[in-house]
Length: 280
Length: 280
Image 1 (cartoon, rainbow over the protein chains, first blue to last red):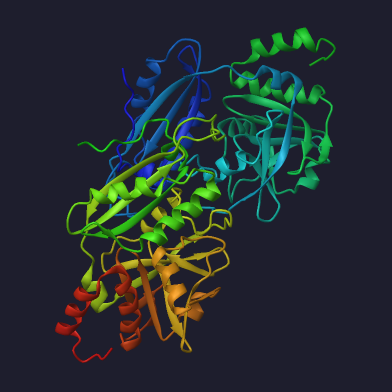
Image 2 (image 1 turned 90 degrees about the horizontal axis):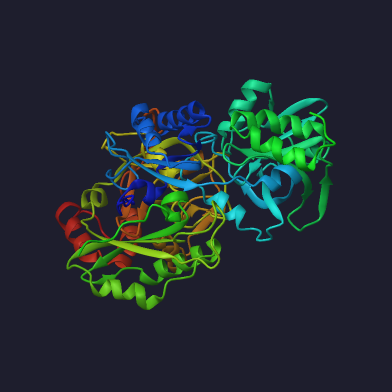
């Protein structure tokens, strides 16, 4: 069956007037489902788009292909209105795609190299945290490098505060505390981030890259890929800023996160073969 | 013939990864065509999207319906890439729509009431000036009011500097000088604005709303609607901030702009019946 696309006058396509979610689904079971549904509802409240029925979303899950999949949900304000002016009431449009998925287990195990991006995220408190469809900043940041050896790019705001990575959230440990950037001005509040904050009591803070260099462990991650330990950090010109040896703190945080995503088994298997010297 | 829509995986629909233009076309003749083509090319250069062939754009014009129309062009990076990462090379997708149009001549003649918006535009110098598809800020600003007596909303940035109106640029005269906000941080550089700056030597400045209150004449306008003189300015709570009597300066600026859009005849007719006391 053909999945329908978007009409030419859909406001999502015209203005990015909508929201999306990418949900990890294992054999029909969505991971962090409640967090995804809640974030979508938060976005709907801010944008003034009716929240889709929970039952409608869950009907989609009933048709999940087997194995590990990403369910991409896109909800737009639909068509209508006059220019930017939204139609009242809106007739939202929900579309979905199933994308077969395999996590990058090598990044799990070996950790990753990340760079700082040139692009500074603009501040927009009204939309901060939401996974809305205005993602040109993320696209432009991701277009800054093409070297596959660099797994992610870190983004700061115009006042040099760390915010996130292009498609992941950022976490670190310092002085025994887990921390992550505060996302009240810009950035996407990932569902894995939200859930880990609640479970582990992670502090949401404003810090510069210089502060990050003092961390004892750094990670990037999201609800689809899981958690990648950061091994090397470099600036936008490729100059090394910091590096970290992977340690048990890295692994413990990863284990917490991956348990939430149902990645335990695979994760342990990866370790047992290559990190049998590491206790957890 | 059905105009095709967007595939589900188009990056314009997914991320707002593209650009658009709305061109006033009179009996197949595009107004300010060069300015539109140039702005589209500027946007392509920044986003890294190949510029459409001029001949391809002009083939669309050959099929223009008669009379006054708006040609909406949308150019996206097409499909592909991996998440935010753009495909290299991209295969852009160009879509268009013809929308019959009639300018709001009452706003031309009588002037308009405008309000200040609560929303502050985020600063993103990389994308400032471009007519890209990330327009949620404009949508949210336009959603702030529903009173049809208010024709436009003025937008400031996070430092209280005036930027634009939700779908128009802003112009004023003060101490005999024409001025418009500088758009190096945010806002859309309208083709009418660009053309008027070049023809009339308008200053691009950073000013607050308080400064605007000292103007002797204020206008909002774009390349489709033409120029609306601002008669009343109020804050976001409806408290009057300033008002202006329409005078010959208003009309002279309007006449300059409308000549560029081919609106002269209609414009003069509107005046002759209602403003025969005004010299130009």
